[in-house]
Amino acid sequence: MAGRNFLYDLIPTLSQSVDIPIICVGNLTTGGTGKTPMVAYLADYFHKQDLNVAILSRGYGRKEKQNPKLITKNSPIDNLAAAALGDEVLMLHQQIPEAALVLDGDRIRGAKAAIKQLAPDLALMDDGFQHRRLRRNFNLLMIDSQRLFGNRHLLPAGSLREPLKALQRADAVVLNKFDQRHPHFYSEAAEILNYISPKKVFCSSYHFRQFSAADGSGSLSLSELKNLGPLCACSGLANNDYFFAQLRSLGLQLEEIASFKDHYDYRDADLKKLIRMSGSRPLITTAKDAVKLKALAEKKEPTLLKQLKIAEIGLKIDHESAFLKLFEPFLRPQNRLAIKPARP
Image 1 (tube, helix red, strand yellow):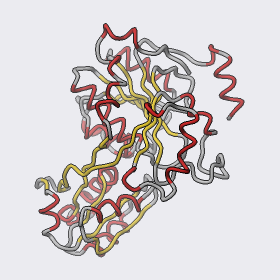
Image 2 (tube, helix red, strand yellow):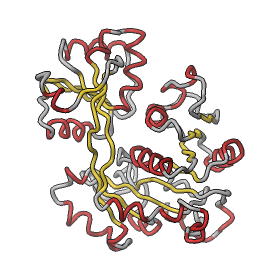
Image 3 (cartoon, one colour):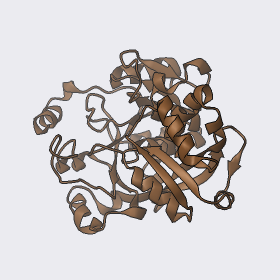
Image 4 (cartoon, rainbow, N blue to C red):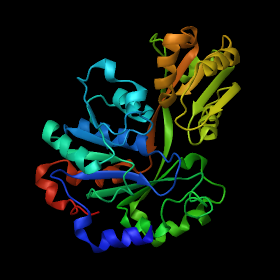
C-alpha cells in the first residue's frame, strides 16, 4: 500500500482529472464509518444551494457489477431494486431523489458518463479515498469514534486499509458516532492531530428524524413510538450494537433484537423469524435494511409490513457552520478559483 501511494504521488499520469469538481467521502478502515449518510448529507446540502449533484458509487452488493448504471429521479421504478443497485444506493435514491447516481467500479468512466449525460455542477464520490485513479478536489475522511483504528494493523491482520500516514491526504476529518465514543477515545485519537489541523477535525452523531411505517400508513414521533410499549429491533450493519444502543438511549424499551451481518441479504426464513420475534409488537429497523425487508415482505410476508417501522436518521455535525464553510468554494462559479487543484 505504501508503494502504491508512493507511485501515485510520484507519477501524475497514473491519475486523471475530469471537468467538474470531485468531493470524495472515504475512510481508512473497513466497516461502517458513516460514509453514505455523509454523502446523503452533502448531496442534500448542495441541492438546497441549487446545484446539480451526481453521486459516484460502486453500488456495493449489486449483482450486475460489470454493467455501469445511471439512476435519476425519472428512472423506471422497475429498475430500482436493491439487487440491481445495492442497498445503500437504493437508500440514497429514496432519500435524495434529485441527485443522480452513477454506479460504476471505474470511477473515471462513471464521472465522464455523468458529465456527458447530466452536466452536473459537481460529483460526490462515495467510498473513494483509496481509489486514487480519479483525481479529486476535496478529501473528506470519516472515522468511527467507537472503533477508531482497531489494533492499528493493516488488512488482513487488522481493519486498516492503509497506514495512518494517509491522513495527510485528507482535507477534513469527521469523527462519527461521537456520542458513543471509545472509552479511551482521546488517547487513541490523539495521533490524528499529527497529520491534520485541529481546525479541520469535526465530530458528528446520528439523530432520529422520524419513524416511518413500512406499509405507508404514516410516521410516528418518538413519544408515539414509546406509547406503543416494548418494541423489537433488527439491523444488518457493520456495527449493530450502536444502532440498538441509540434506540435505548432515546428511552425505547427493546424487548428483543436480531443482528445480521452488514449488507445482509434477507431470506424467507429470516422474515418468519422476525415475525415470530416481534409478534404484535412494532419492529424497528434501519432505512438501509428496509429497502430489502420491504421488497421481500411485500412478496412473501405482507403481515410484517404492519409491524415494520423505519428509523429515519440524519447526521448532526458539531460546529456545522464551520464545517459547511469548507465547501463554500464549490457553491458559486466565481469562487471556483478557491477550490484546491484536483489531485490523486
